[in-house]
Image (tube, rainbow, N blue to C red; front, side):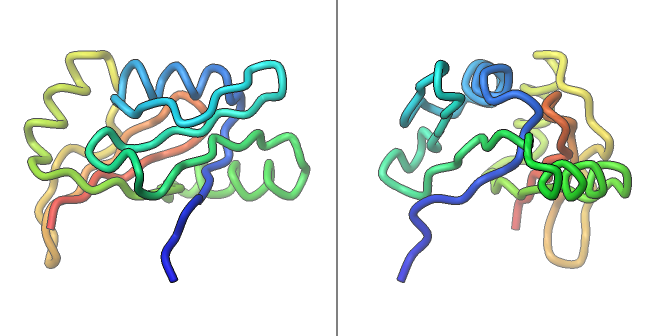
Length: 125
């Protein structure tokens, strides 16, 4: 069994699609803006797990997303081979970091705001 699709709740799938593709570098898998459907994939694994940028217009999803954000908890984790290089690349594009690259017991982590209502964690093992 493997994960085919997972999701992250966003304020606006259209705005999120622009950020996730133009800033983060994900590739379009499926994009139907009229239906508010935006699915992206990693350029390193275009046949791998897809990420649905899911509208959080349902009250349960909205409370969950807002609660995570309020507590500073990342909604999802993306692995990167060189966290310092990725941090610098994203900072140059104006991405706001909540936590700069920091060494932990298991590797490195950094946390940024995706401009769509979430904190995202970068991880390097």
